[in-house]
Image (cartoon, rainbow, N blue to C red):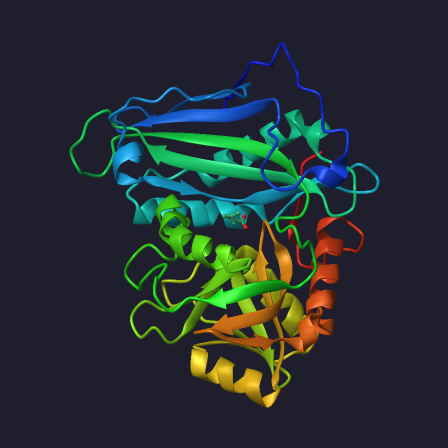
Length: 355
Ligand code: COI
């Protein structure tokens, strides 16, 4: 595909202290943009200096939430190779999300070329320190300039990049999670499996309430029975119960996480029994009480593998593995990040070399 590149004439200074990057605070010099119309298809693919995007006040996304996004990372290895982790999975998930929200599909090959071109241009922004990476945020929104409620005829696809450190201030230390019993994030038949802004908007009230009480995030129960565990705020969730690894099955209201899928494969490789099944809050509560809940952790691109040290449900708090990171969680974090940062050989074919 043809991508027109306009380079910035005023490049920004790169962050001097990589230990203070945090998550999603700093943006690189350029971004990718491309427009869609029902008549012309995708057109005008361009990389331009990073800047605010002008938007029509009646634009569909501002009123009806026609927005989807992805999150993936580019890593710098010790010998300065630049690589992405399973980008094709993100592209496919973006297209699945687009199908759910009646947004246009991207050609997989073009979408990969866009990521490669932007990441290569921004490669000097990829931090060098352990635990850091370049977070890539592709997103698409409906852009029709009128107020009727209908599938859009115009859309825009954008990719921005941000050098990042740990998502949670806790880093790889265990987080405190509140199990939410009032609000629900998604229901089967809704948009739970799609990565759309609306799912995150629906999660904010419970997240804020939990944060005020000293928790990092909430753990969601299903919206119908209010009984089955679905996912944690911005991550999928896994438990080790009596030696077995259990993660909620993809029922339609759970995000099909790429880190989740990779962790399931790594755990199976290591010989663990991994069950993707329904897990009720009663089962979890019982396991926590009788001591068989051995470990709990979240998985996600931004947070990678994040141990859960405390869970609270309807005012009752229970500690997981004495509030310290468990062996399986630590091994999983080490193994996954070693593949991503090129410290071990990638035997799964997950790494996509950029340059
Ligand atoms: C990711 O893990 O990449 C996500 O999209 C979570 C995000 C909302 C920070």
